[in-house]
Length: 145
Image (cartoon, rainbow, N blue to C red; front, top):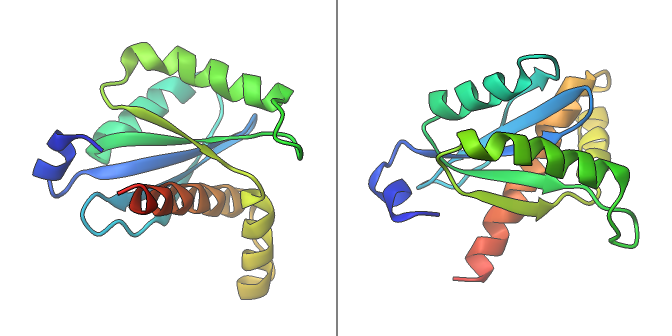
């Protein structure tokens, strides 16, 4: 987190769970640090603009991106796709980017939603997965303090 984020008590940390069809989004206030699902963006021709607009509307001070890996921690085709997507965004971003392992976040999201509400949309799974990514990032920051 930057010093500027601490000054702006309304600023938010935004997390993305980037997929090929949808991007789950979660956010947390920089002071309260409680992550919650925000929305799901549909991947399309305007997706980069949609992410930039979202970061601006959230007064984002940082972007956390889930990094998908294989079961043994190896890079996969999806790892490379997410990195390429973020590389395309970087020139337009005015906030720092942090990578966070997203292992099992979608699986945990499906289990939680199935337990709580039975039927759920894929978008709900993606937004909750982004929440888990953000929670993991915030917990890691607490440990490193």
